[in-house]
Structure formats: structure tokens, C-alpha cells
Image (cartoon, rainbow, N blue to C red):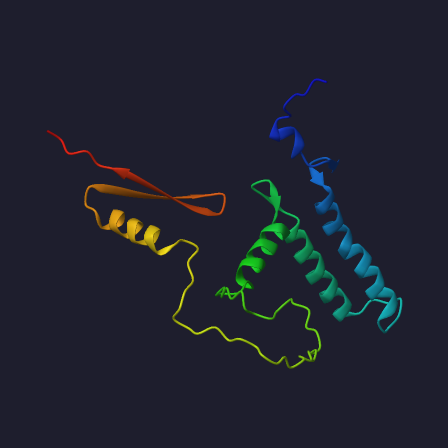
Length: 170
């Protein structure tokens, strides 16, 4: 199967409806016609002209015509939307992963623990090591030896320690 790269100019071309007008511009120019007919028919005096109807219609038409102007390949309405999103964004973003926003809160559940007799509580401060005492002493002596180099590596979730002996030069 053959694949070819499509230039960005081809994919971003806006369809032209009438002459140089795109779909967004045509919709913006159609809005005053629609709302003007609704104003003319709906507000009193119905189906007759009134000065306030003419003022409202001219303000709506001039606003829509200004928003339909194209600047740098985009209509002014899109520039206004970008500016409004920028001005209305939150000023500070505080990240807190302990926040309860957006989490489902469940009711508290009561967990009943059966009391066990003869529960052994380990004493703090004592640590059990899988190595016998002789091996621990030998490892401690190797670490304290200035002629030995230690290297630590993290691989696949484990800590690997490499001990190499430094040979004196000479």
C-alpha cells in the first residue's frame, strides 16, 4: 500500500461558498437578516417599522459585518474567541493531587475487626535481616575499606550494588 504525505496547505483550505466568503462569514452575514425579520414581526408594532427596531437592526448588522472581516486568514470572530479564552482563563494553577475535585466520594464504611488474642506486636528499633551476622560484618568491612569502590544501579525496580576493588597504581 502506497502512502504519500499531504501538504498542510491542502488540508487547511477553507471551502469558499460565494466568491471569497467562507462558511463562517456567510453565517455571520445571515444572522442580521434572520434576527431582523424576527424583530420586525415579533416586537410591537407588529409588522410595522419603528425607530428602535431600525437602531437594533443596524447595530446587529454592523456588529456581524465587523466580525465577518478576515484578518490573517481568520475571521475577527475567531480572534475575539481566542482573546476571550485568554482573558477568562484562571490566573493561577494550583496543583494538588490530594484535592477531592473530580473524585467520586463514597459513604463511610464501617469495618468491624475481630479482636484476636495473643497478638504479637513487634518492637520498634529491631530489624531482622535475611543475612547472617558474619556476612553483615564482612559487607560492612568492605564498605569501609578505602580500596573498594561501590556502584549502585536501579534496574527493573530493584537496587543492584556492585563492589569493585581498586588496584593501586605503581
